[in-house]
Image 1 (cartoon, rainbow, N blue to C red):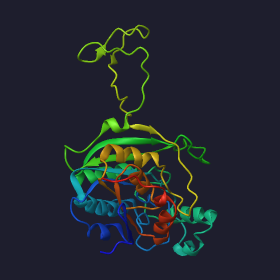
Image 2: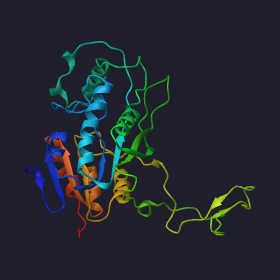
Image 3: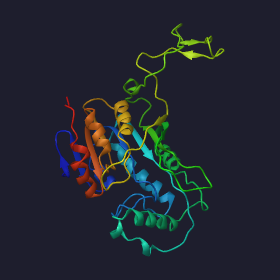
Image 4: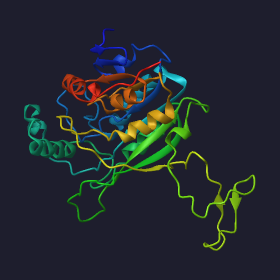
Length: 315
């Protein structure tokens, strides 16, 4: 298999994720960080794209097929970090005649066509239901042999407002940590956060005291010298990207995953490479990067922008 682009740090493949993954060596990747296309929310103008399926069940099945190949190429002690957003069911109406991929350069028309496409899908829930796509995928991956270790909430601190009046605005997405085995590479110290030391106690082996001077008797844990565990709610703002790929996640998100799930010199994979955010995070922290992308324009975009922004020396 000839890569679309390759150097000492970065290898990019152009093609369908499952097809390309099937040609990679088993256990050749230490960490996978990816944000697949969300169900029914984007049309990238490429035949065979994930997310354009006629039903939620078909989308879940297609994504599980791809991630089954990820399981094969991932090291036994590797980690998969999977970012997914959700979708709502809408009323069935209209036909397929309005989906014109030649108009994708107009954002307003794109949004209207996306909404129209969602109305033509075969939903398994009545209108206005939140479909629970992330959890459907997570449960299906558990059934397929993955171990689900964490559900991390990505809190978008600057989320765009929604023009809805009968529900709350969505301000988060899901990030699942999945593994092949019960023992895996995980460096918590690499992502610890600064902590407030006021009132902290360092007495006793257990690290607990039940006599806080001002709070009236709740237990406090001895502080770790490297900082606190960041927990499973990550408050990270979205970041704009000046390119045609309008569904990027912020650099800080894959950075945390890569720092925790790999070491310098390891290989990091994103089977839905897009604008190359995971690749930039990987190379910034001295990892090698393998990216797969169905749309050639996004590969070119990532090479012109994200992936030319400096690479740390690799061992």
